[in-house]
Length: 494
Image 1 (tube, rainbow, N blue to C red):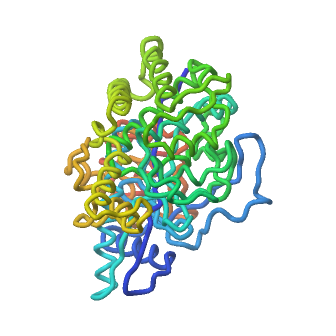
Image 2 (cartoon, rainbow, N blue to C red):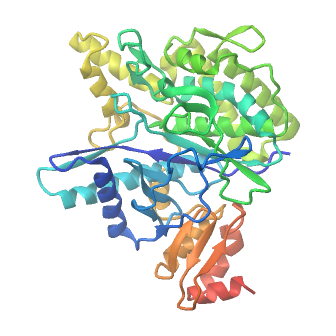
């Protein structure tokens, strides 16, 4: 039976400094330190138990891969339960664990506001004549891509082979409603003139169907086996194939539909008749076709459009709701996702412009086409690429995504609250509340433990191997009643 889903997003942001040192690692460190210093006590990340070279296919590549983790770079834990750090040459925020697609949207929007606040604090340090600018996109336009990764908790008993084969068609085709849009093409040996506009920021960068890499030879299905919880009971599906969305509804549908498809796979209710024969070439073929009419070859020899495959997935999801229910993804949210899934497919099929208030690539294309027509530009004009990147500019007064009428799902007050408050339905609550109430006593944290120093040797590690424990229901009153971290530890040990 499908287990209750826990999920989240990790977003790497593009960074530029004008008028000062533009080293991205230095700039990212300045950005994060400026925010943390201004808002909370810095608590570092605990790298104990990190194992990014474990492969879900049953082996480990520690001796083959270069070190994935650079533990000397800035790495902080925020009072809302999120991780804020320098990943390679980008600032990155990993959201706290949540249990619904709507909560992903809420804390994803909070992450964007944390970045905006960070820019303000960093620019005060840089001083007059210099400015730091952050972009929520996935490509620098020079052939380099950075990710927006998703994480989904799954039952360890579900065979990974079934997950990998059956989820691939969804990953290849969901870009029709959650692609962020891109001017031009970064696929090797293709020119921008051949592909003036495409659905996805990331599709050009995927070279494998399945694999452990995340920065080279990127796979559509990532095999990293690092659950950050009880490995005997759970696996974490680490997804690297999505775009970072500016549209809240696109983020909601990206996560919400994937949660439902994964629940169907856990319950073995999806079947194999929607498998695509050549996923790598198909993800690009679909991305390069804003008309949504190109077909791809299915494993059984048929041909189908991305929309036809998505309709097939939605049809199975409707039946699954009737036979199994959607409690594993939150029944109310799941039902809303199904309604919006049908609405967006209907709109894309009849008139894509009708869903420009939900779908990033549609909203951006309207901007790009309007600018090109007004100024009589060629399709490969660099000025159109400037429009593309400005769509993702997180400066509130420059962000074009703020001006295209995108629908919102969460209020400004909810977003502001989520910048400092953790979710109440997962272990992120315990992490965030302890950081808020006992900041001087928490010396390090990670996803599955907190390390306390209460003046008594040795340091005390509190394990959190169950993502659905440590919630407000479980420990809210206990934390409220304890005046010190030492008292909390004593009562937890009773």
